[in-house]
Length: 315
Image (cartoon, rainbow, N blue to C red; front, side, top):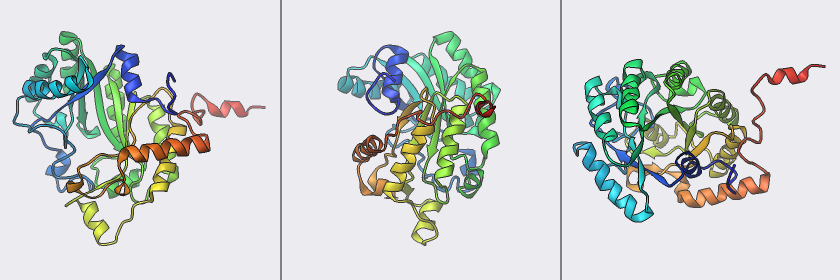
């Protein structure tokens, strides 16, 4: 790694990839999620999704990009950007609507990459072909963001994710077949998950050779099924110390080639009953770095389980 941090930071990854600072511009499209239409959606998912920083979906894509760009450019002096289709399940749009928004973003000046957030069970060749066509015509790189959350399929069922491991693996293989990059989202402290699930999640993402990962600390959005279960005393959340330990171990097992985009969740206080043990994410990051220094953790420290590990046991 080309930095002092004990993990491969996403900011460094973008500099390595583009040779300069590149920032994400969130885009909010008028789309929902098939899991919400089928019921209440994932147990932890808020009604407004995750696009807390994005503009209203009724604002045209080019206008969203331009207004957010002006703020980012003034603050960070950046000149190249990623159009990030962030909220809900963007490939759940009708195909031609999806094509329209993709082309609108791709035709915006100084957009180096399109990043599309979706679900593992909403990835198909038709939608990937739309992105491939945009890449050919406009020249941007393509990244697909998929929510795995955990390798524990029983937990996925309990959280009402609407998919298990098979769908995630199928989506990853499809994305790779188009040569697109892939970002996986994980939550390392879901109820009933243990340290062994954290390790297996890191090993799975490494074996599938994703390019980036976002680790989210579980927060309880008001009005969600998980928040209501917490208020009834039916579920508990692990301690801050346990989460930091899991995060450090997750990085130990994670391939050093995978960039780490996020370590802790960020959500407006007014929208959540619980988030990050009442501590700011940057203070938690400092605690994580101190823990990793004291215990000798670093990304890839235990990345020695692939490429025929069992052959090393031959006499």
